[in-house]
Amino acid sequence: MEETIVKIIAYGIRDDEKPYLDQWSEEKGIEVKAVAELLDETTVDQAKGYDGAVVYQQKPYTAEVLDKLASFGIKSLSLRNVGVDNIDADAIKRNGIKVTNVPAYSPNAIAELTATQLMRLLRRTNTFDRKIANGDLRWAPDIADELDQMTVGVIATGRIGRKAINIYKGFGAKIVAYDIFHNPELEKEGIYVDTLDELYAQADVISLHSPATKENEHMLDDDAFSKMKDGVFILNPARGALIDTDALIRALDSGKVGGAALDVYENEVGIFNTDFGSFDAIPDERLKNLIKRENVLVTPHIAFYTKTAAKNMTQFALTSNVNLIEKGTDESEVKFD
Image (cartoon, rainbow, N blue to C red):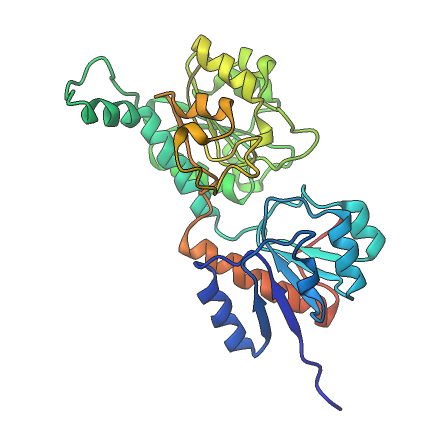
């Protein structure tokens, strides 16, 4: 009996991912076609003749694209990221496509950048960088805060949230946390509060690690900010939609928010990971407003961007795709209800 040869197409493969793809392909003896372009209506035809597709992108996975994949016989789709909110769920179910993600490619990566940016905010490094560039080497009036004197409110205590908690504890911070699902070990420590309002009232720093859901959209809005301490620091390495940008700008203007570190932004698609050639050419005035502030640190969705994460995202997704093709299931399969 002739052995079936599995063939996979991988879209949006970056230069930093390619060595890990090649390593996996050689070790597994499985053919993988690496495509630099993202999966969309203009590139989907390249998937003809393949058994599965591995993808990573911020673009929507539209019904048109998913219908075409199914028409080619591709029913195995593996994402190299966590989020599935940009997938047309109806088209997935209609076509019987199975989807996997990589739920934990490197929690450390996200938690480490989040803590790094918090320390930059507390030590006013952005302000001092700008002062020094202009020849001003004075200290005052930019005196810093110390994290061991502060309470950090962690919203969502999944893998990343727990890694962040460990780092904050290392600095000596007091932790309060909110999550619908309580982690048993953290439960024993007694750090959970019953409501977000309680967390808002206690926290000097709020660290967001929630997924993007309809219920969580604009979790931090005018009402939420009004319940927080004056001068609170906001950290968002999770999803841009968690924060109402206009409300954040108002809170920064009023001083209610003392500083923010944003690795995500609610209108980042088509903007982040793009070279516009100059600051003025960035086509989003609210984003430019945030970037220009000394007490706001914006990074273009780079918290995940480490060598460890790039390897795990690529190789975990490829392995999941093979499992879907050969076994019809994988432990990372995402259910669309």
